[in-house]
Image (cartoon, rainbow, N blue to C red; front, side, top):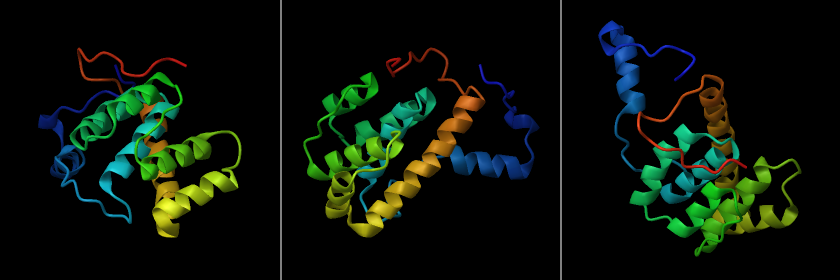
Length: 158
């Protein structure tokens, strides 16, 4: 149960209904940045794992399955274990995000691999993406946004 009561759709203003439809509606699946949508979803899932954001994981795991991101590697991420991705761009995103979310500065090696795979614009977008989804995860955590009724938790407690 969340800490902020849900607003019944019947009580929403027209502006709230429009915003709710835009935020919760279907996504086009198109990527807006310099790298493919599956790398964006992977970065979001790594972020969700870092923050133990069950709701964020739930929403974005649906996209990851549709995009056929390696299931075994995502299982390792969910379990809080080291993951190995079959594609070098996915591994670079994983390594960079883990470093970025860790306590130490991103190593020159992790940065160089990410830049080699994604380009400078891709690394800039990746940093921005992780920052944005960290904000979302913190809001989810702070307001105790839970999973849909009946949905079992995905993430191992680490």
